[in-house]
Length: 306
Image (tube, rainbow, N blue to C red; front, side, top):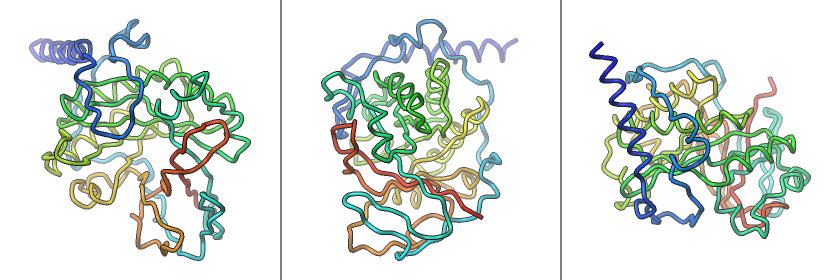
């Protein structure tokens, strides 16, 4: 009975924290001036507050997703530039082109809607949509106001659709809170792609700046385990710095990566530049796509042929 009361108090505390978030709590130290809604004020949260899992994942316990997938392998001759897009011409993989989208790309369009049919006609085969963002200073949790229409639009166009949350979690409880919010948001918006955990540290202004690697790893694991428990496929977005300096890959090895590296047209591309468990490569931040308007991140998704 005592354990039940503790769990109930924990759940109510988290919901209260989300509900009392104000617009002043969101740091603008990153480069996206986007539209946000305090999580509890968005319609998806009004009907039912998120129920938090009683199980907090333990460090060094990993799930089985992607466990048997072979490591990535390719070299410079496998890629060619076509304008601002990088294309794979090797033999090992079926590779698809995709984009990731947030309010930043949506809000400037005249009708505040991305033309997903036009994007598909321009070669977009998958999209990863931002669902939520945690502020980099006080850590308030916010919902991207356009997540629902972007998911529904991409899915209706026949584009494989995943989602991501911009995380600033500094505890496992905060990572679970982010996972629960994503799960609630997806109840009315089915997807057929991964749910990605995007934990970032840009500079000293980020609340994640001093978080030790053990804690960062535990947060990523907590998020991924809860997402998998809910029936989705988790994935981790991470830069070279975080992957090398923060994350313990013995703990996270079951989860595949969405990895950003932006080569120039004269840079050499080889398997040695990447982590063996990478699945999606974000190769550019400035790709033109019909129906979007603003420059957008370009991504390649690798699937082994054999």
